[in-house]
Image (tube, rainbow over all chains, first blue to last red; front, side):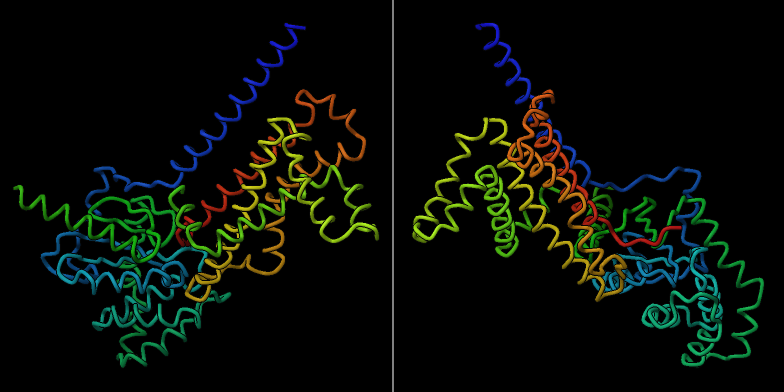
Length: 231
Length: 181
């Protein structure tokens, strides 16, 4: 009888212990799963963070931090980040430098066509105009079953480009090579999708909305400022 | 994630949803073993409305008499977790709808998606718990005694599934938009 009571007590203690451990374990697991940190990139790929003379850059020449974004113009997530990045540029006009690079995804029928259209526009000094227009109009031309170059010609006309030069540029190997240069650097950096952000040479997990993004940039600026002061 | 959970539940609407669903699940749990009695009294013409309500209220006390400490604990926990899960699910749907108005499309937001989403893992958790009550109620207690924990396994399974469901939903909420290769 006494042994039965002892067994019963031992059983209850075991059940309670498992129960408490499971609850505490779950809470720790949930807490840890929500944290993400900037990932360091190997030194072999460090060159890709050097801003090239023909990179498309917005922001102060003496900016304290550099944000590189790999984009696919047909990607909805890039479209979602487009106003956020624009807002950041306005928020930190002197301290933030934004570098935009092409990374058309193979799954998007117009990804490469759009990138070529933007690069061809860039040859006439209209990179940012075409970039903005394609994201603003993304819903009307995105997710089509086949490439639609005529749509981009319409946008080029809208921007007042020299259409003959535009058409030659779109078909030229130089324009394609320029896009592919960015694609290759993105691949070597290990991009698994778009947008892919790199902040001062470190992979930045895609932020949760504008406030999160702003906080990350502000922290990086503060850190760079304190480093400059201490030197 | 815990921080996010706290942020959501400081909003009165979500706290209210969680409380209402939690109380409903708890009520079902304590009333289910006395379903026959409730049926008899509720349909009785001799009992007054006050007496009927009094009976329903008194059955809440059954948590201390009809349940073991462990089963009472997981019953309360399942009610709380199911309330949290329901409120979180409403928050998730609203967040996805807000994003959809922006630029990110959510293909799974059809009626079917919502229904299957909610009644997927969440109801599996609740189902295991109701199953225990029904098996006892339905005279299948012999089967339950064959189980190492006398049927309490279903309760633990329910708690585990709900914790996982809440975790999955929070993880989905934390996912940033991205187009994968």
